Image 1 (cartoon, one colour):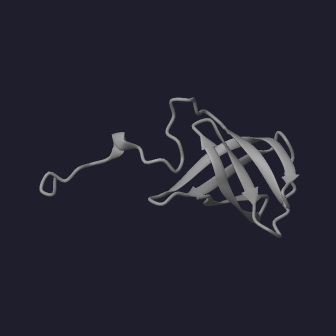
Image 2 (cartoon, rainbow, N blue to C red; image 1 turned 45 degrees about the horizontal axis):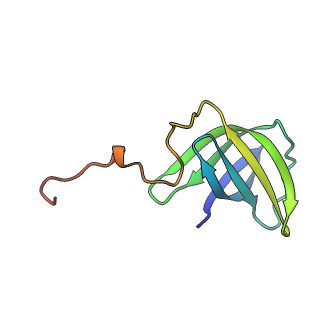
Length: 102
């Protein structure tokens, strides 16, 4: 399921959804009625609400396009590699098991 997200352009906040993600970037769909003045090359700070914690990513808008009645954009995450943690996926290396329950 898509993950809710927000970002700002200037002092205005916009809502979108993270639909597809990799460690190095994501594909976002703007919510209906949202029309930010985005263009390729813009720098954004986006907050994605994952089930267990909000996650902030800095990135560059790689593309923006209307499709299927919605506006979509791609964001390349700054400073992340294919080995970086992926938003929305449980990182088992960060899990802590309570020995009294296990």
